[in-house]
Length: 160
Image (cartoon, rainbow, N blue to C red):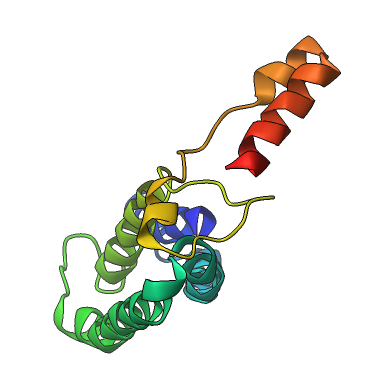
């Protein structure tokens, strides 16, 4: 999602600083737009993976449905953004890509505090979901080379 967002935001730099009369500028814009579309389309599929892992069983159907409705709302609004919002100062086709890129970067930032679910049981109740701890950094264990410390971190995460 970050790659797609940055590609969309990079189209603004191409519009502002590249020579628009060159044919290669159009190819760069098309390439950045395609990479942005790829990243955003891939993030749509991540909803299914993360939705199943993070939401507790009792709320999983409702939460996944709400996430899909939100994604569908974005899909319905995107043609309106592309057709109706045009600013001549930065180019007719650049502002929608900036909006989509900023939304993708914002969505990426919102996923940072989500808990890590690797090697853990999926939550079945709301209490189980609340007991998920935020992401723990275990890189210090690898830097120290202490195998027992790595094993204790793994045991703490799986015991929850």
